[in-house]
Length: 399
Image (cartoon, rainbow, N blue to C red):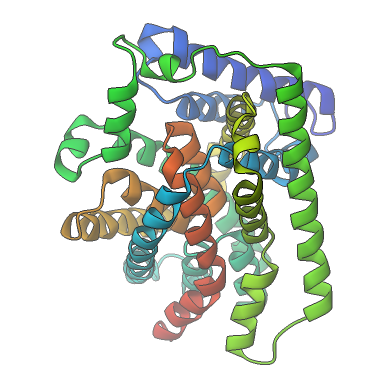
């Protein structure tokens, strides 16, 4: 039982907004936290609050952030998109994403052979996690329905995954900020940010320095973004009802692409920018609004990571999920070095595989890698299409 009940909407929104504000303030104003990304600060605040019983680990408020705030942030942050960089980076990231998916498969196989004597139904869980860590939660649900593991093991896997994801975000953000890693793998996008920053102890504060923003800018930015979200999600639901399910694998893959709401959201945003580019780019404040929404998202990411629940129900499952993620990271970094990818692309490819395109875009946004936001959203959505096939392949190899 938490200090703030799950149905106390006002207090939970207060916590989320104050935590996001605190993370932004500390990142930009406190010298001792200026080298720590605000996303990590937000995540740690939430992790501490949930594990000390201040807030619940589940609430409709958190679902609202996932369902409305995150989609709203995506158009806001794409309005300043560089189209030339979009097409250049998309082709590069596609190759790295597919190579990273191989890392997920290998990680699931290594984790299974290391722990199958200690974790029941690990063959099924390996297939579920391989699917989820190629696509996302949709693939986890689909594989759960197909493989039918026990409810207890499914629940324990979800708990382990929640904590692992919080840890993995911290690892990815730390890697991308490491001076040694940046020197070895290269970091062209971060280097550009550093060059553009004003000399001082805090590049982030310089990047988000004050600018003239009018009430009209804010109103039009929010209106355009919510309109694009509404059209995209409504169109997705309509297409799913109209087209139904395919009769074979190829048709199912095509329908998954056509009806995916986040792919539609990204596509309609890009079309809007292409048509109204100059007017859209005049909307000062869209980046700031979108960024604040992403900070709310990072607070929510840290909340479900309940350490007591892991200790009680799923310590070895946590080890298994972390093994899959770490193997994915190592293999992606090896491929990245061989094919001369920057650390930003490597980190985002890993994130898109393990956490899905939305969280990968959130990481790109939080780090200021604007040219990679659109590409990772587009490429990461491919994981939803191939995730189930990767999961079934892993499960089949373990039989």
